[in-house]
Image 1 (cartoon, rainbow, N blue to C red):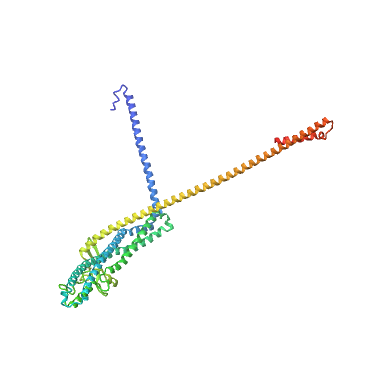
Image 2: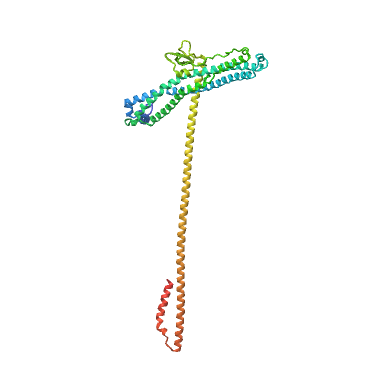
Amino acid sequence: MCGCFSSPFPLISCYHRSKELTVTITSTMFIQLRRVVYLLVLLQCCTCVVRADFNEKDPATCLNDTDFRVAERQFNGTLHESDRIFLEGEACLKLWKDKVDDCNAYVRDYRAAAHKVTEVVSEIAAKNPSKDQCGTVVADLVQQAKVRVDEFKRVAARSSDKVELARNTKTICISSAVGNLLAVVPKIEEAMVHYKSYLDDVKYKVCKTDWRTKRVQEVEANHTKMKEVHKQLVEVMPEKHQLCRVDGGSVAPVDEVKAALKTFQTVCGKGLEGVEVNPVKEASGIWNYTKGDSHKVAVIRVVDGKVVEGADKERPLTETENETFMVRVMGNGKVPEMKEANVRKIKEDFVTAKKAVVVEREQAEQRRLEEEREKEARRKQEEEQRRLLAAEQARKAKEEQDKKKSEEQAKRERDENGKKDAEVKAKEEEAKRVAEEARKAKEEAKRVAAEEAKKKKDGSVSPALVHSSLILLVLSVLGCTLVC
């Protein structure tokens, strides 16, 4: 059983072992219970901390008030996906500017190529050759004109593609980023005003915690940036598009080349060999809509790199859009024609632009943090300089004060020493005077004594004897004065 009956005193042995076992079990249970108590105390402390933090963030007034909670939920709901919309707006603006800048460069080349054709034809016309001389005297210039016309045709084709890509980019941006920003910006502003009215209300004063205030400030800052991006998108597109239009000058490049070729035909009696009088047709994407066109354009969406028509969102072109619209309308007058290659290109570039915007934001944030660090470092440096300057000024003031005290102390010591010297000198003078008077009195006494002695010898009585007691009194007084 327990092995205790094998001992000489089995009952006593079992009793002692049972007692030891009981004590051991009791001790173990006590240790375990103590650990449980410690755990419960720790759990209670954590609960108190969490509850305190929760109450600090959301007091009962905020948690139990339905109106406040609804306003906060509406505010949070309005901000849903606002960051994504804002990012896409910035990316679209960046992409559009890049495409238009690229387009402008090609359009400039397009105009330059047309000017080169005009220049060489003008040079031929200036020589006023006969019809026979066009093939001999100015043959080199004629060949040069052919080369320049071919170059113009190649540049025109490239420019046409760039213009079309820029116009397609604008269409996609308008249908996505601009529209999304236009929809979300006023909603955020309205929700923010409504939410702030609760935070600024005295009734909800306890709800205006630091984290809520900071969050509203961040939303306000982003909202301001969103409005600025939307404004730039709305303003820059027509303006930039006018810069990208190939017929933005007084004469379109293609018309300039046509006029030059007609001039050549007039001078030489025939056109350039192998070149039509109208060698360049208006390429796809390079044209104007005229006012009063009845064309309609469906809202375009891009899904998985494909153009999707929104037939229920058809709308007529306005005059402003007629002047700056970017995409050719197909024969049915509904859906803008857009090459799938352009859609894929824009889609890829849009992803790249979003990544670039994210990088720019991170760099801007890094610059902001670096500026704050530099500002804080300058503040600390200036504070340290002010502290050192104050310490230096205090040191100089203390030195000046100590110097002044030392000078005053030295002056007092000099005055005291001078006073003591004067007193000593006065005492010395007085002592000399008393000594001199004593000497004179002594000499006088000797003289009087000598005279008296002489008179005694002579048997006469001197009047000095009458005053001898008075003289002794005077000598006594003088002696006392000298001693003092």
